[in-house]
Length: 364
Ligand SMILES: *Cc1c(COP(=O)(O)O)cnc(C)c1O
Figure (tube, rainbow, N blue to C red):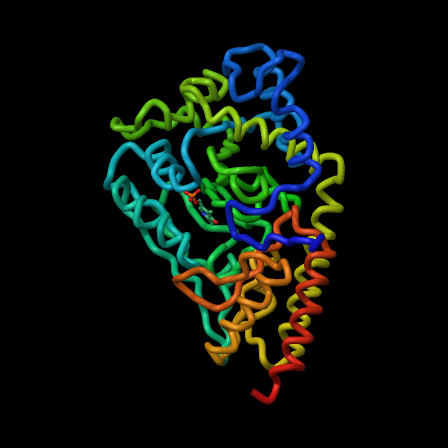
């Protein structure tokens, strides 16, 4: 059988051990003789599972006691409105939004409905390469209530891995495409959030980690209850009926991460991206326009100048079991997403295909 490797940007690859476990438990979960899909979110087994998931997350991510873990209804984008609505009550109050690419732009567009947004553009050019300016050069506004940035721009393949330096300012970050891929110093943040369909599991919810004092801030009066962090916390994330199956899958993925260890996961992610970028830089046929300092380890974006060759690359790779390498419609090119579930073996297969492809077509 041909080995398949899934490079999808999201929803993305799930560890095969997890899928096997789902298959095994599908008709009889926790000896209840029904599928987990058919169990109430108020069932004690389900609640135990939720507590287990929280406990494991706290351990893996080293989340301090004064931070709360919330599982929220809605995809990552729901947090683009939940964040400003939970932190700001008056639309003339200011917030700083760092612009680094398409996802941060979407967050900005949404936030503008709820507060006065100061946009800090950190996309810089050096020669023909782009990079994101370091935090010390971000032009923070004195009066802003919080700073928002996107830790990993999934579409362009740009990332910010610095440990934050901001003091006396609430820092909010969208970690949708890089959460659980490396250790994060939670204490530096007010809020971290992420969509569920990349490193956490399948689509269906968003994870929010919030410093508890922020739960008490005055909120936008139109904030829907199901997006209200204080209510979600009080109800232990069970205010409204959650997407139970996606929580179930997330719990299994988180157990899988725990069994490997976040440090090992991080090492593997560094290794995978290093292998791939070194091939992109070595062979002339491939181009990446980002300075190494801002290159994403999760989403590696590159191009083949000749559009016709690029099409052939995408068709051939798909045929040999390297799936979904087509770049996002907004930027084109090729994108290999190397989330936690992507093995080094998968990256090696891609790299070997790229070497052969380059040899075959170098004089094209
Ligand atoms: C995937 C993603 C989101 C969330 O998208 P949804 O479709 O709303 O889940 C948000 N931010 C970033 C950086 C992402 O990669």
